[in-house]
Every structure is written in C-alpha cells, then in structure tokens.
Amino acid sequence: MIHTEALIIGAGPVGLFQAFQLGLQDIRCHVVDALPQVGGQCVELYANKPIYDIPGIPLCTGQELIDQLQIQIKPFAPHFHLQQLVSQLHAREDGQWHVQTDKGTQFIATTVFIAAGVGAFVQRGLSLPGFDELLGQHIFHVAPNTSVFKGKHLVVLGDNDAALEACAQWRQGPHAAASVSLVHRRDQFQAIPEAVEDMRQSCASHAMRFVAGQPTGLVQTDGHLSGLEILNANGESEILRADALLLCLGVSPKLGPISNWGLAMERKQLLVNTECYATQAPGIFAVGDINTYPGKKKLIVCGFHEATLAAFGASALLHPDQKTLLQYTTTSSHLHKLLGVS
Image (tube, rainbow, N blue to C red; front, side):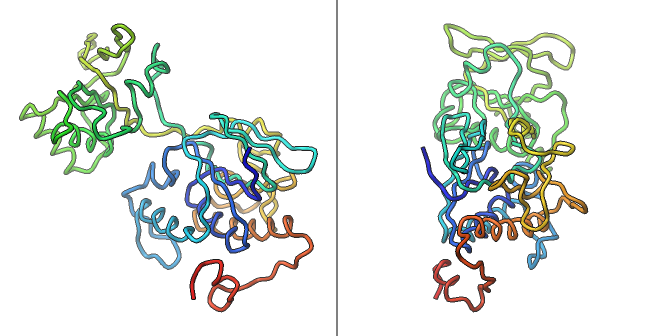
C-alpha cells in the first residue's frame, strides 16, 4: 500500500505539468498511466508533428514538449507507475481515497488528480483466439530487449513510423531477425516518405517483405506461435511464418473505469468548478480534456492553467491551517529551494 498526498492519473502534458505545480506547493506525488511511457496523446499521436501554441515556445514537436516537461519536474522526483490502468477508486472512512490499478498496485491518496485526457489510451491488440495467452511471450507491443527477435521470423503489424522503424531495426545488424514481414491491410502508409521509400527498397532487394492483408488467426505449435493467418488482398487465406509478432497499431482512447467511480459527468467528461477544478467529490480534481465546464476549450495551454489552480486547491485542502501564498519563481527563495536553484 502506497501512501501519498497526491496521485495523478495520466502522464500526458497536463498530468506532467500538474506534478510540477504540485511540487511548487511542496506536494509530492505519484503518477499512473496505462501506456508504457509518459507523454499520452502528445507522444502517441503527435510525437514528430509540430505544435505552435505553447507559450514561449514558437515551435516544438509533441515529443520535444514531453521531454522538456520531464526536465522541468525533475526537482520534485514524482514516482511513475506505467503500463497500469486505474481500475478502482473509492472513498475511505477517513476521507482519503483508495485507488487500485489492474496490476494490483494500491494507493491511499489524500488528493487525486484525473488528467486522463479523453480516457486511458490503450494499445490496440488483436481480437483473435490465443492473443491474450501469447501476449508478452511471442506477441509484443514494445520489444522488451534488443535481442528478443534475433534469429526469429518476425511479423510487424502497422502502417506508421514506428512499424517501419521496427522493420529497419530488425532486418539488419547483430540482433537481426531471420526474416521480417510487414503486414497492413492496404499498400498505403501513415509514415514519413523517407521511411516508406526505405521500406520499398528493402522489399525490392528481398531484405524484407510487405504483405497487404488482415490478420484472421494465430497459428500455434505446441503452445508456441508459429504463424499468422491473414486474408490477403486477393481475398485468399494465407499463412505467414511467424515466431514473433510486433504490434505497431497505435492506441485507442477508452473512458474505461472512470465512468464507474460515481463522479458527476456530462457527455463522458467530468464536471468541475472553475475555482480549483475540483469535482463534486472532496479531494478529487480533474484537469485537461477529461473535464468540462462552461466555456471549456480542449487546448494544452488551458490544461496548464487548470493544473495550476488545481494545485492551489489541493494545497488549501492538505494544509488548511496554512495560508496559501502566491509566490513567484523569479523572486521566492522558498520556491528556489524547492527547485534546487541558487
């Protein structure tokens, strides 16, 4: 059981900035996210795409924004619990909140900040018999190590940059797979032109192959993956040799268990007040795209504003006997000490 003053659900840009603003209030926190890395939508959908409306930063990519936010929160050392979906949240008799993830991690938190965007981003899988049993053994969303596919017949599924980069990584080098096949339902890709051209040249030189088709079954031999059955572009069933599958299918947002937590909602968004972005449940705040209120705008910069006021609201709740002072990072020696600057 982990005891914490603050628990943040969601490690996207607003969740990360929430950790920073809590730090300025001398409140340490834990952060939970369903994805295996921080960044949320910014990394999954906009990692290499330009963002122009972050104050003071004329241009940055989604990944660059997340990188800078991680540097910014370093002085406060938040504890991250990744690849875990918050499955339960309920009030305790002492006024705190009991929170549990699908991996069994449990928290007792005085305040909870829901920064889950449009819900938890869940990695897309395959709705095929045997998928759950093979996941993590022969089927992967992310390669667990550099040699996991060495000497194996690898099939990569996807049409994005990650899929094409994976093909380039595993078709050559000291840890190369025995063969690499790329599967997507059609011969069109959502990747940078250079990566697509590199893939096509590699197919032409027989360094790898591309097969247009839709997965229809997993072939197993003695409990091990041995092939992927697909319906190819000609409408015929075909089995590709496969010792391992790497899924680069992106993510899908799901509201998930949030709808079962007893919090007031409107159109799948949490209702909050605009004084401190608290929900109707004492100690629970909602910031970013997951909340709604009159005049709500789904912009990162608006989420940053909400996180700032939510941190002040949490400070007043956690330290009712102390006056919450507005201090400036330019002049406050107290904030300088928290930030570790002279």
